[in-house]
Length: 396
Image 1 (cartoon, one colour):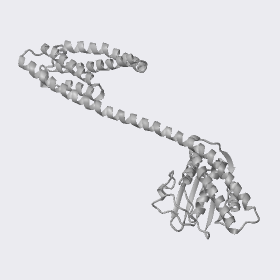
Image 2: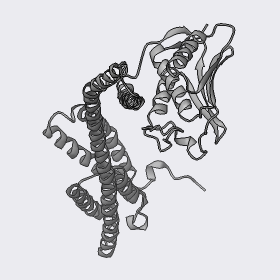
Image 3: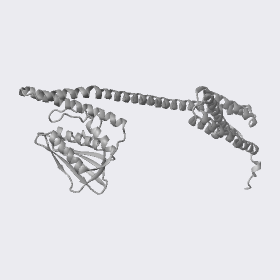
Image 4: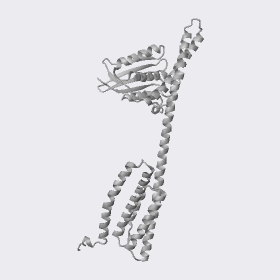
């Protein structure tokens, strides 16, 4: 079968003209888009020009697909594939206001009606083709409005989220300011009350009941100060993400902490330390890591009976250091284990002596350990005890 020369293909001249138009017009749209993107936010006038430019480009794309339909078929309504593809692409990928969508539909329909007589002369065919075009334009309009509604809904949700985030940030700032007031206005009076109670205890003419009451006052002051310190530590950790560290020998560091607890908590739960013969170093912030150990030891004492003891164990290998804080007290129920490191945790419980908790201590512990580049894990069995394990990088 002999091949038809390309020059004899129907509308070959129209194809050539359309291709030349696309070649010359495309750079105009590209350069215009680059310019408008750079200056879009400058003035209302520039934003209006950008919207008009976008509508013009969409119209150009729709007409380009329309002309492909005319060129490839003697009777366009026999296949409107290219025309419909152009309309669907614009409807899906572009978002237009209501009047812009109407303008595009009307302009495209008028253009179709003006081009059609160049390819069809019969009245019936003109009517049928225009009806087919009308159906496609209605589909385009509906799809475009659906796309607009969908994206507008997402946009409103994003704006609502942004507003909520701003409100949260304002609430955090207000909370930190309140905590600052708490630190200034409550810690000093508590210290004064505790000091006054200590002076009164020095009185020789005091019966046993008065002495116990003064001890209760001091103990209550300590509890209140601990809660205030936890709240302040939480705010401080949010504001100051970094802290200085230094190379510290952990045997001596942990021994000092244990000795301080043994001296200050005399008569309560025994604390035993099991270290290593060789020196073990890690980069830590002494103050922050001391707070971690104090929290873990305090937590262990809170849930241990008088007959129980607490073990602090240090282990190390070539790459890491492990610090265990182990008690043999009431343990933690399995259903609460996933929540114990949460802030204001639902896992907060009274201690064996009725000690209250606000659920911040272990949250602070995890914050500090994580910022040291380490990790903390917990293992517990009810009525058998709990072990917290801190994992950190070992340094030479």
